[in-house]
Image (cartoon, rainbow over the protein chains, first blue to last red):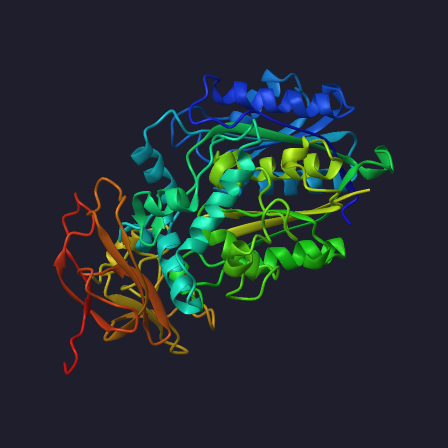
Length: 384
Length: 133
């Protein structure tokens, strides 16, 4: 129990290159979340803005203060939360703490990233600066770690290459009915297997895209929301892991994922078996499998088979990434973790059209991961 | 190797925030107090928190995982063969000399290569140790 409810959510359409500026994107998501809540901007006591790359891509500095004025919540406390690709969930965590601390008013959490301002090699370079200096010296990028882990996973469990492609095909299938997704086209297992190699055995369609977009949530003390029909944050937990990936005991282990998951579930008083719908940080297809296993949704070495069997599909026993995941909805770093929460709230409230609605979910789970497991943030939400 | 970044008793170890690329890629850290070994810079020994830290040259390791990266940064070779190798309790990720190395192979650092363009220094890559050597 956190004592905090999600009283409103909203996001912009995720696109490869948005016309809107970084502030316009953030303001649009904030407006949608406030409109969805029953709160006015005068009630916003704190503004928590997540963004990873504004300075390194040269869009702007001081994004939180600029946004406070842009959306007219001057007077609220405001700051910016940077936790690379998990900035969004970290900002949500800070917002939960702010509301839980018993202040007056509500917390507005806004995540934004505008990645299209630079070309792909520049953005890749900016992101790869998050690795350890001794890793950087070897030319390591985030997909490099994905390739190392994917190769080790397929070898150890004798899993077919198709099992990775099946993750991509599933998440693209889910995104087809999501107008907020960057990609709304079908990608078949064969398409994924035929796409160019990025980091063997990972191919282009095993990797998330670069994205412009924003997402926002409004957090309120739970006593201020109706007992019926509200979505509460039952648990939220963060944990860091080793900075250098090779220092982990096992190339398939991501300790921060496990620890953050345990903290979130402990606080919620719930377990993986209670989860009806999950948003898993699939920056690479292999990560969806590794995280599902590390969190205890599946035993080690079995998530690939469950995926091939359709268990994680929209109509499976554990629908995973019904909005398309990072893979197909897109991955605007600072907004991604919040877009997972937005998706869960929509699913739990039953807001979605039938073709992408999970039937009657009560408990939702999200995991947002920084780097290749440098830091993980897990959130458990429940519809009352 | 061996130039102090200042501020610590051990003149060989780069201090956090200093110039971590000073240490040669084939060298790891060892705690003078408890003997713990590690590769990735830490301000203190991860086991005993000691600050008397030396370095040593890595010998023979075993390849634990590998990948060939086709889409690399502009200053990095393409394809870039990479592997995770275990040297006793030390584990690290490094460039492989070529694609002719398999998981389970014995490896050692060898050669003089430019790991990223634009650097003056050359560094060794992980190279397979042929059977019988």
